[in-house]
Amino acid sequence: MCLDDVLATQAGVVSRVQALESGLTPQEVDRRVARRRWHPVHPRVYLVGDAPRTDEARVWAAVLWAGEGAVLSGVAAAWWLGLPVRAPSTIAVTVPRRRAVGRRPGVVVRRRTLPVADLGEHRGLPVTALPLTVLETASEIGVAFLDAVPARTVPREEVVAASERAGVGERLLAEAAERAELRARLRLAGMLRRAGVPAHVVPGRKAVVCPVHRVLVCGSGEPAPRGWATVVGTGEDAEVVAMVRERAWIAG
Image: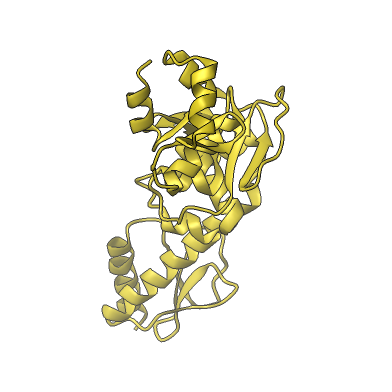
């Protein structure tokens, strides 16, 4: 193990174990600490020389301190993976349940044995896999985070699978699905209005209402008022608009 390579990869942070594996003796490590060439960040974890105390360094220090099997998780993992969040002031790490880890300022430790499907690595650092990271982050900062992560980046079925493995997040995902459905209805209502069909979304109903032409756009099972035409809106928006315009013309 080359110490310079380790420091370059880990933002100037190194653990005592890594330093010894690179060829330094315990006495050499102790001398560097005593002479303030290395600065303790956590027990047996050091920031070397004039390396800045960056968010990246904080993350590396937390995971190295947590030890064997530790992975970055939660909002810190989302930040590390490039998702739209800021680096948190407290770094979350998850360690296997069999391990007992102490406490450190600025670090929160979760004891849970993660399945292989929920483990990953990014830029050399062990981190929770993307779907679990999204789920945990949304649980911490709110369901709106799911809206901010494009489905092409993290397919929703993968987030659902992570939720099922973890046994958490069902209510969160249900709320996210409802929010997505509402956005779709609002988008469709706007398209209908631009196509010349007055339309709006009624709170509490999973439908788009076109009152002038007495047309209801909804999913299957949504009841329509007597005398109204129904369009089941399960296709692409443009297709639904064409169907509604046809029904509106017939009704008019």
